[in-house]
Figure 1: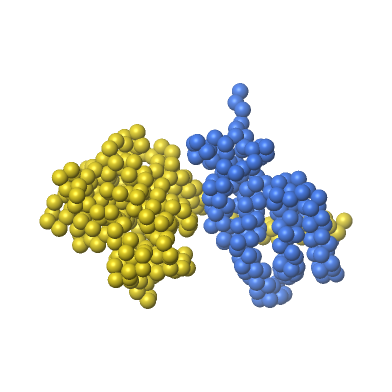
Figure 2: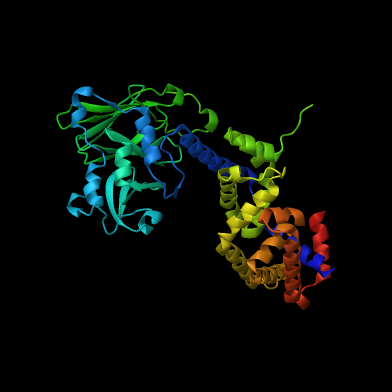
Length: 273
Length: 190
């Protein structure tokens, strides 16, 4: 019966570790599950929220959701818009002088998985302590945030968003545990000098100016987003995306944009402001 | 009269309605957490238990619906999570060893020394043998359920657990006062 004694000794050891604070564990697990559910829900809605891990997958599907939503372009200025990927095409083709954004500093604090990626990296935009990074590797271009990355060929990406002035790459990390503020990143056509993100409640908009093909802003997620507009150097609005939080509300000129942390997940509580 | 939703049904429904996953979560949290705590120590159990359920949620579409009870599947995931954090197991061993060295004459020191010895012996087992044995003893699964958890034939489970017990018994040998342990074991079960 020695086997039984071995099992008994193992159980005796186990009891040493059986003391725990289950309510705290439950809370931590539920928090984690809510996060997982939110990500899944965002993906199902087509919102650009992707699981926290690098996935070698085309960005086309994501960009296509923007395209399908029908980014609004003011007819009079349609010609002013160029592909948001124009600045990347020369860089990906090997023309380093045409590289977008800025080079990565030697002591740049980038996520480990981004550092581990092979290829030349450039910082396109920064917000809330997070960077939007472009990684060039052969003909492939990867757009990376702290939590995810998307890869595609420059030609495929360009085709998928042709005519769009603004492409939402994705929301970044929440800035604090209260989940009220998070970064939001996107690409812009070369004609766009600034973007303005507005809320439905009329509270002060978030503006990013002096853009060079990309933007990063910090938004308040408990306010319903209304739109994001692109302006040229003269201050003229040349493109606008209207945010919808429900796929049933999508119509030409609208794009899905609900960046909340939803405790209810499958039935997010109504916007309270 | 109400019929309780099986884990398999809850998981299947959760594909369309993610919150259904909470049925499985609430049903098995205690067992999963206890198993994780036994493997890596309770100070790390919170994070790793959350990781188990996060992985389970992400992978629920791959759940084999022929098994109504999801606990073996969850403990299989838990075993993989522990496998990704082997250093935590090693830390538990080191902590116990330090404890036995610091309190050589104190009450309970013999049990601590035995525990440290057993943990060292466990650490020397092949990972596959250790996982099978600990799913039986600490996970409280049947051999059939361990087979399901690890995705291996039940005969393999039997051979792995038998080998693990044989090696541990040989390793512990004369150091174990089995009578004392038996007495302690009965108290623990009371």
